[in-house]
Image (cartoon, rainbow, N blue to C red; front, side, top):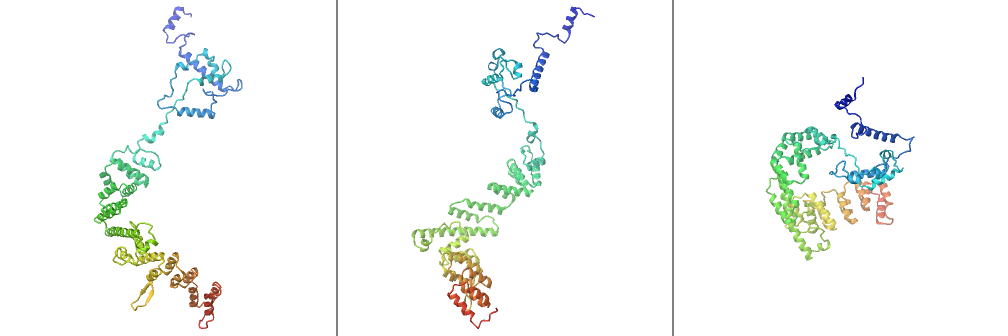
Length: 491
């Protein structure tokens, strides 16, 4: 059935659909179709390998896509962007407007990589000359990458992540309960680094009274905290912690260590004197007393010897100038110094070695070793011999040493003692084999010969005869022993 012309116009005017017109350029369907055609043209351009010429993929700058220069330029352009610059910058229409009539390029030729003049490179060069810059949109990182910072981890999960070296934030644990749970889980994990990190956070966010109170019931955390304060040299807070714990001896020792930072010897002496009243243990108190007495004595000896050295009154200071000051030296070093420069002084003087030994209760063996080293250094062999000489109640003298004579020989040999001096002490070694070994090492021939004679070992004596110098007194002595009929040789 045919409709009249009026009915058709009424239908089109009343319907929600519009009639197709060639003049309607704003129609959405038309624009959609044109966009689809443009995409299809690009797809055909990519897939066109056999029918068309091979078209090289280029960027807007005219460089091949995927080349090294293209990658460098893309990276540089991305780095030069600032946070304030939008992802798609607005292009000035005055600069970017390239009319079709002026450029001589069509959209279809652009997609196919050809110009009306047949040269696509000229078009890309014209774009390079302009100040146009096209940017790819900057994509935000996935939320999973921010999960470590924004997730609501429990104290136990936080400690586990800290053990694996992952970044966590402790600032969200604000309540005392959460902070203590964090500390307890870190202690249970047996990880010292995690415990220290949690303690640093608690030190910053809790009052000292609360922190000290909670650490008293957590001995492992307390030990870590004390170690941390020692390493960081926070002595003030460490003293307050010791006082809160009632550890008075630790407070006293910590205060005593402050003398190390005092350079002036008189001020250090006065500080040590003030430490005598601190609540040390009996053993520590005696050490502090000895330290103060020693420094006081060193100050007196140093002043006297410095004046004597400058005045040139004592010969020993001229032959052996002092290499360092005696101030703040250990006790044994002070004793060695007194044995070296003041060995013959009367016991009533501060610098007398015997006075030092008596004042500080130095053992006989320690005094003997120190005096032996000092007098052997000076090559005072008479003083060395006097150290070994002792008298019994009958008036007889004999050599006695708190050291083994083997060690005595080593000390004398290091100080270049002559053979005659060494021979006297090698002969005092009890073990025959060790005595022979030392005698051969230090070329004490008489000791070797006499030992083989006492052992009645004729074969060893004959063998040693070939080691001595021919025609020497030692060779003649061996010959006399070999022909002696009174010796009953065992071989």
